[in-house]
Amino acid sequence: MAKSATPLLKIISGPSPTLQGAAATSGGFSPLISALSTAADLAPLDGKQLFSFLHFRMATAKRAENHSKWFGGRLLNKFSGECPNYIPLSGTQVCQAFLAAGIQPPESVVAAGQYEMRLDFARKAYDALKAEHDA
Image (tube, rainbow, N blue to C red; front, side):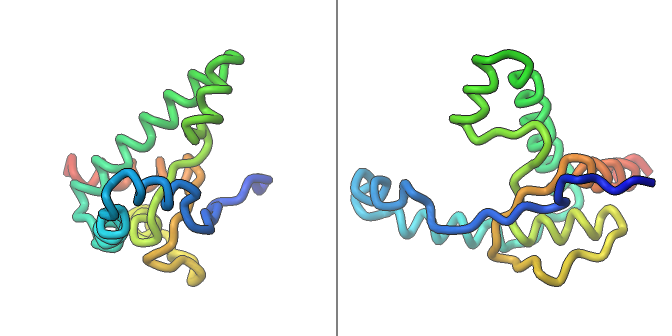
């Protein structure tokens, strides 16, 4: 079996470029909202929640794939950050998806990290969770 030239995971790094603007327009609540969002990403999901989450992310990737068939759609994908080949996940979600697919997660993945997982591996986790749910 030939190896794919695309990486399995992409690391999303750096602070959000909109953090300062959001704090100014939210009356200073942005750091609190950001902290709550980070805390939610750190909490593990149960099997049904992870299944639903992956379903939503894969549907978004499918929409991005449909958009990528024409120039205006590719432009929309660029501005929205949607990608037909990867789905965004937190480090906790990445580890859970790997484990659901029966694959040991990479040691370099940290719970608080933000990653993009290649769609074919997300589908393996989704299919495993679906089989578990249907059983």
